[in-house]
Image 1 (cartoon, rainbow, N blue to C red):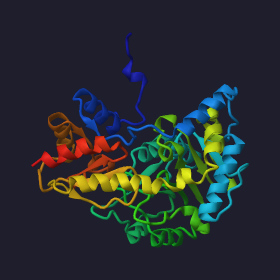
Image 2: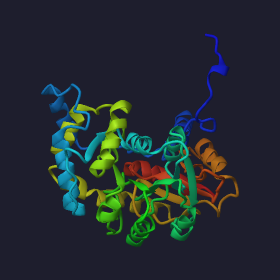
Image 3: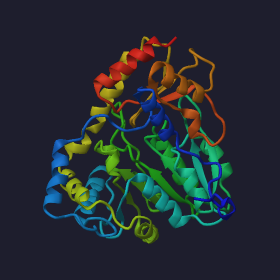
Length: 386
């Protein structure tokens, strides 16, 4: 078929295929252990899978309400009130989404217009900046650096202008595994108290946080919560990333705008899965025990690779563990990641790709949400690299 390139002007001219797709494909081509993309290689709860099947058998297979199945929204409201002591009305302040990425895009598209500025902290999950660009906004970048990836709030203050419309935060943080502390949220709250700035708080790993730390959700800070979209993910929480189901919490005035966009982006979300998760949430242990489950995997992996030449950076949550290879090679992290995949048969993600500008600190991200035998095989390889 003939093409007419003059008819199309790309809205994302600098964007190619995501690094997750690239590295997973490379892992497949070279039959490498894939610790790159953030997905588990073990099955989720049989109980949850059975609940989805039962919902299908009951005939719950047609469109769900645009905002989501009410029973699920009610269970989310109960969970949120129990953990964070804040009430979100299930009718007007909770919306079920087709995963967290859709929720983030929807929140950005609902608020950002031509020329609006959005402050983003890098390294950052790779959907933030393209979503801002697609909606005519401008990303204003605050860089964080290894090993602690702390936010310099005095720097943030200097970057706020009359055009600043939104700040996006993420904790527990992908890709670094770090977490925001109470003082970070207090600083943010103070910084935007007399502005019209809206916050997106990406909290998809809220139930995967380690070392007896408490997740500092925006929901714990009333003055922040009243101007924030809080995004979470059942796919991440319940080890079913392919189900693509998440949710958004926001005060009514923000949720009204969110739903205006949501109904035309996805309209509604997988009905039987919503019913199943609504039932599954009734047992609090199904999400309150996840921190211990994933910390065991982090600890298992870290203990195995202690003999290696990699430097282990602290991971306080998420599916991920960062490793510095500065004692092994001076290669660019993108080149080193590719070489590990091809020569050593282990795939990771170079952290530099999470920056909008070139920041290469010789660090790779490895997913530890894997079976023990997978982690053992990966550790054996990493220990052999000199």
